[in-house]
Amino acid sequence: MTLTRPSLGVADGSEPRPRTGVSRAVAVLVLVALGALIPLVGPSAALHGTGEAAAPGTAGIGQLRTVLFAALCVPVGELFVNRLARSVPGVPPAMPRSWAPYAAAAGFVAALGLASVVSTGNLVPNSPADLDIGGLYASRDGKLALLEVNAFAMAGLCALSRRPATQLWPLAAVVIAEALRAHPTTEHSPLLGSGLTLVHLTCATLWAGGLLHALRTLRGWGVREAGTALLGLYARVAAVLLAAITATGVGSSLRRMPSETILEQLTGTAYGRALLAKMLLMAAVAALALWARIRLRRAADPLTACSPARAEVVVLGVVVAVSGLLTALPVPIRW
Figure 1 (cartoon, rainbow, N blue to C red):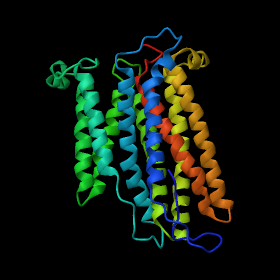
Figure 2: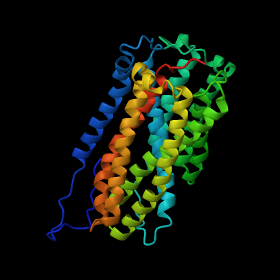
Figure 3: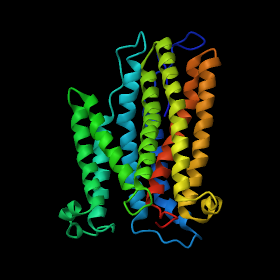
Figure 4: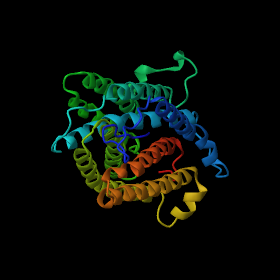
């Protein structure tokens, strides 16, 4: 994703050449295709040599969860950054067009696909006859799957209404459902695990979605001071979000893999390998965020911080794909 500031001019005083957006669209499509490959080919690579068996449809489930997580990030990030923008003096009236309705539609389709898998007893349905929609009401996972389907449908309607901020409530319901789904009642201290996941997922969606929307907003603004102020506000909140993501991620990992076995499981299990990949990507994200923060504070033009920030968004997209894969892989510890 690229960022331009068309009304800020260039160093030699000439006007920058307009861009048609075709190259940007092509770049986005390429990145989306590459991101889709992670949950598609990731299970076989992660499971190779571990002796673990993949659940049916692992690749498809990983892709659906990747879409679901991305569909959460977009509207949550928009609500977050729009709220920050209201506290910035001299904000231009122009704001980027909302992607929330499209995200809600994608999330609805992904949640519907995941619900169809749950309705067949976590097996990939071969035909509509295999689906047992009524059976979803009889199980905890089924009810959570239906909640996510309905929540994305409601979020889409709210996004199209005159009060788009109301989509916060159905989106919060999706986050809560995901936190509960990730920790079944048979697990040791499931409420603790759900609490950690709730905080982790909330902070992650605010960070990834917020940065994406902040860059989209800056691209449409021609006021340098307002753009710098908005990016500074986001950077301060992002530092807190990173600390919370790190703390909850470590806590969740130690619950799955006790400290005395974590080094072995990081390389010897599919879940551990995917988690290790996510940790390395998050380290790269943190480095890019630090680089952007240094530029924002010390560079002659603070908005040059957008360059590492754009790279950060790309890596965060890969993190979302790896997270989708992680939820589909077998957990190393059986409770």
